[in-house]
Image 1 (cartoon, rainbow, N blue to C red):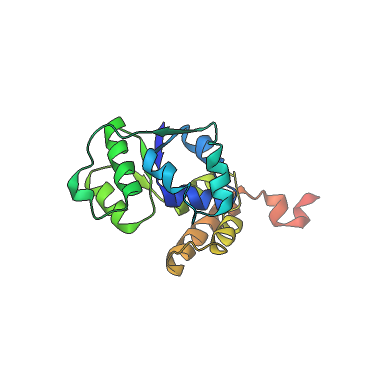
Image 2 (cartoon, rainbow, N blue to C red; image 1 turned 135 degrees about the vertical axis):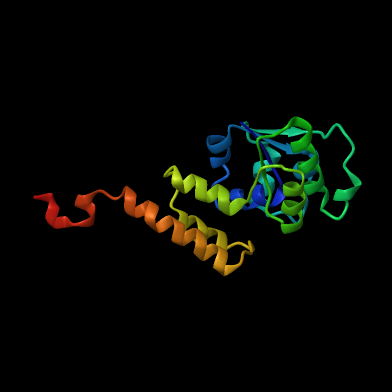
Length: 175
């Protein structure tokens, strides 16, 4: 699988210590040059800049080869290049959070997931505890509608209940 990541998702996954999930979940991870540059700016959190300065071995930085479609001009350059690169290399997935960027990607029939979706997929594979990951995310400047966060947490409850063995549910069943 080939996944393209935009700046925001990669930034927040690094900040909460879960960027290492990306290659586990999706295999080959690529970011366009503009995203890599955005993650190196002075206003980028030091932890993110440090990780990106020594680009992780699972992350490939790639230059977009074709012109960015002018219809994407209203988006940030990282989103423009991420969408363009996803189309260019026919990526299997685009990791993108911003509403306008997601809307543009969906209109181009690109498969899109956001930071919350990445965390949910990892939780489904028991790679992390979703409530704990969302609590870390809330301590950053990440913004999401509280109703949306509640939906993700509610979907996590039955998954945890299914994974709990009967003896863990009822201590009397141990005997």
